[in-house]
Image (cartoon, rainbow, N blue to C red; front, side):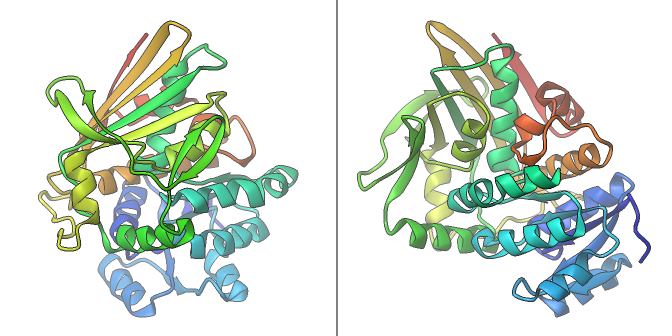
Length: 343
């Protein structure tokens, strides 16, 4: 394959989120290059789409180099990212192309910032972890809500999901995260990640209409507690999850997402409210949309488009809110997301 600014490698292209990413890339005029570890599933997807595929294992650097040859960027949708992120990032650095992933694993994202920040900056490379519903969207909303503030006392990100039917990838990532935490939970407080043995609080969050007040699990930590403080001076970043969704995602008998429209999206809806506070002042952002997995695709593909057209603000390992113009990025998602900013 000839190198092309329109060719984007998708590692894990056959997965639930990967398929949404492939479809959105094609819709935006890109040529997805199907890559991943499972040759049979790659062949099946290639047969369905007519796209080229290349099999590569994360423990085979040569195969990864071949998989990315000719690509202008790579999107990693294959978890657990504790296993896949570092090898695919290394391959992207060798190829000299941007790397984007959809990791929701807090420790994997923290590792990416810690292990690759200096190298990526020195190379002038761009690595964007957690460019997904968890991690990316909350960071964009928090950055937009901050406006001209250079710091804040606290940020709160509340997830109002109508339900959460996890994919196999979500369950696998959860297993890895629990193993790494050795039974502890994690939050971001006092300017750092803190690991605790106590139960998280349950409280009521006053979501705006039509959702209204709902019981939530406080400190139900998601990737936002890595992305937001990576570039915003906020010592307390808390995330919250509606109790029903928190129960569903851990219940062993919750089914996987079921397609409910011609795009393959489920019926799930979401409302995300972000509140940042500084002194006695408060600013907020509210976003509404459908299907957290499907929505990751427009996030990822808009990021890829901006990376490949030079609409970026930083190099190194960067979160969405740091590398992109957050309000402009959110406006670009208007076909898939309704956003309200209030000061």
